[in-house]
Length: 571
Image (tube, rainbow, N blue to C red):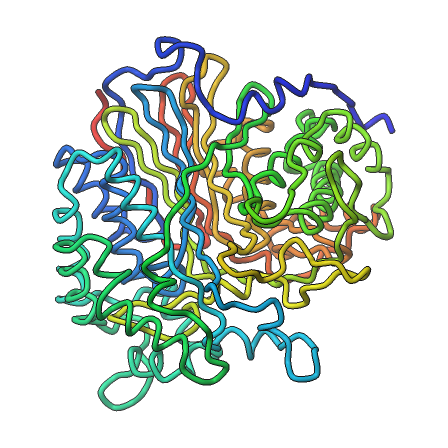
């Protein structure tokens, strides 16, 4: 066990209060000038955000513009019909708040809605394009709440770039073209098939120009009417109608749409090395990321490096322990008791960390943190249709936002030029545990499904903004972000190099990752330790990150996608 370095941190420091706020404003407040930046998965979206900043807009203003363009140019990942978690750091007050824009289940939703007539779980392929898959969308409402509280420009002036691009069209990028070249179930849905068809009936390819006048028209109404353009009136009626249409029509109503409200939440924070890392609370899986970092801090991974197979072995085994706990206990904290404090208790993590032996465990089970009930055997499937972006304005305010329509092209159903999410498939299809009790992530009326979206904002020892990170990738998000933080914090890599490190996702007994990206000696070393890495879901991260070192902005984008880092002028 000499490769483990057990540490114990007082619980008060570990959680460091749920609210990321300094003792006094002067201790944490940034200067009134900072170098602005936008980091996003598509250059057109990033530029739309930077244009807003250059007009004097805040990070919250720019976030609206970025999302509006992403919905158009990256429809496989996020959009106006989806949900999001938005971290907003207010530099003047030093406060961090989470805007929870996660979708909710309709009030008539049933815990058995993803079971067939024989009481067996539906296949994911069947559920994903069904009307039951869609939850009441929350991204637009969350953005509107954040912008109303922190914006400096008028809401109606934030959609110009997206409207112009939708009217004039954009060139189908290699990434979007790659998804269009595959046989996703969503592309067989009539809405998606029609949208991506050329005049001759063939599907669009890389280099084609894609126009979306219906989306441009919707954005004009959204700019003029505010979020009522989505949650009330004709768009809401069409949204509801599309969810209630066969196959497997859902139960959403106009009342469900009108009643949606985003939730302002306090972040959960924990120390990692010299930083304080803050994430959204449940239904986000941020507690899982913080637990992963805590487990890794109890090993000697920092003294190793990316060329050491033992380092990757430690990461894999810590990941397996974390995922076992995350899968067993995390759900919507407004409906179920999630043992957040117990999962992050130093003594509990000490006990979990000592389970990392010299050879991979045959099986990894969930532990029993304080406040936990009987652990669940969870089989929730989470695919990779998501996006993340980071923005800082000239006043030092920061947005770290993860946004999604859940699977690739959501449910494949469309309204007014944007895709409907299939977010309710993030619930557990089997609502009951082995003992017959209700699973924490079971479907429930008005409930938010568990999410792996984990936007992060970090603070240094003085309480100043030190960085932000997040990713796409379904349940792999926690591993993607964890790997990158190890690279940039423990191994001293640039953010770009840390994001480019090979991905390794160890959840359960089938570790996956970018096998071809690892050095053969590392793969051999992992295999000797019982980690036989195989190709799988680990190739499609969508990481974006930034870290501030000595006042210098070090930003990076995932080389697996089409991201970009745009820097504004230095103060």
